[in-house]
Length: 193
Picture 1 (cartoon, one colour):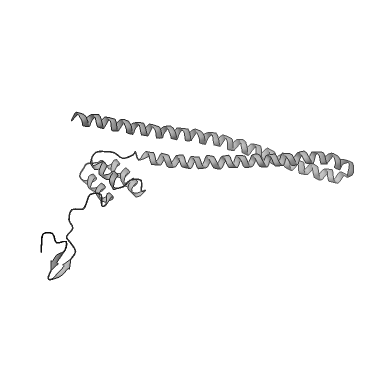
Picture 2 (cartoon, rainbow, N blue to C red):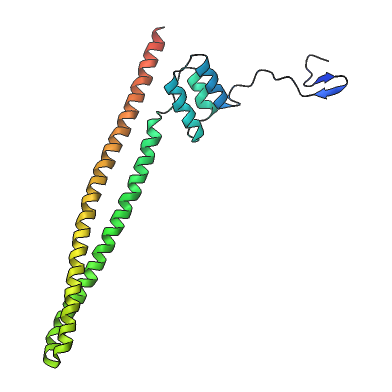
């Protein structure tokens, strides 16, 4: 058996090579576990990075940067980004719903106006038609009122969602600032050593 042999021999049968030192970055989860076991990172960092690996946000390079003492993007940021996307989707859906209600309201108002002019004509012709028109007008008015009230409710919800979105954007900016300050502080501390 030569020193450079990649296989072991046992009674003339080739066996797989003995496990040697694993190349860094080959298994980022295992590397992360090694850092935690060695006490190089705390439990919260381990759990944050493990979650990042599982969600595909982090990769082997991020784990190696962590091993060198550099932190990756804050774990809260991807969560904030996801929340912002969800809020954006909800805002768009609400705006579409409000727009749809406005369109329906406009159509009903036009129908109501048309029925108003027809009601006067119907009174001259037959009392029965006038009653039917009056009933239809009343139903349209009730539906218009329901649309107005639903639209007001949705607009209030939209305002709250946009306020929550602004708050999330502020939190995201704060997280970036904190991360930048942390990097600057580490750079200053590292420069003094």
